[in-house]
Length: 343
Ligand SMILES: C[S@@+](CC[C@H](N)C(=O)[O-])C[C@H]1O[C@@H](n2cnc3c(N)ncnc32)[C@H](O)[C@@H]1O
Image (cartoon, rainbow, N blue to C red; front, side, top):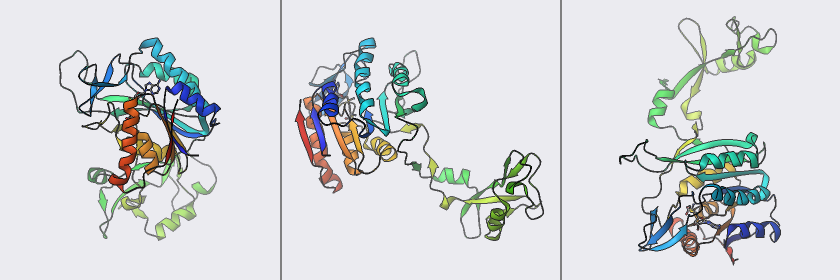
């Protein structure tokens, strides 16, 4: 499949992908960042984006006039088509704000199934705001993550430990200078028979617990120096920091908006890199039908995925074309080949 950039209303665009391109069930990952029902216009002035709505000093990049029920109906029509396009191992991430997001969550539960709801990711979007208002400062929006089935593509992402993490989680240092922690070699729950209840170095697991693994493995660990014995003879397994792949990624993500966006509400490349690497594979097709300045498409290309982008705004298409062109000069990666279609 060729990469595709489509200019037009995405309702028409998604129908085109289903009917003309026969892509039903072929898309592994959808990320969308639709308008958030703010009721405003988003401007481009002096070639730069204004991320606040309704300042009338430049060209309107896109309007966000649908609110309330109308907005939900607008989004529902697109989500229904996106569900058709998703593969069995597919995932969808919907970026939305705290005002309308909970209504979108209820709708997505219905469309994709509560059992396929994976996360409501809090995305830290900006620095704390200190202007006076009744209510707490809002520094986050939300990304709703659903999968099409119980068997999605999932490449477990890991984060590097910080120095502080290392000191806290691996407080001990061995003779070779390696940081480590120790964990119990037994776990709750009694087993009457079986391999996890036998004698290890002459001892049984404590009452109400069983060995975490069979005794032969415990002996191998001990012989390889992977068991630390306390002064009162309590064995614990050694876990070295340098053998861990890093820490699990949690559901609060700090990817603040770019300080000088080229396009209003443009998102950070790193946000898309994380989503794309985790929920798609090389050669997967990634779709963003509210692609704006093409952040998703650029990230998909850099990560060796195929992509389809749709946007109805002339400014968005121009920004996308420029962003895709910049790949070669910024990153020394060959710029992508794609077909441009105007609907
Ligand atoms: C929030 S912006 C996306 C920004 C993008 N994530 C980025 O990083 O640049 C939303 C985009 O949706 C587009 N859009 C809104 N309604 C649309 C529709 N019905 N069909 C296609 N595009 C639409 C707007 O033109 C706008 O570019």
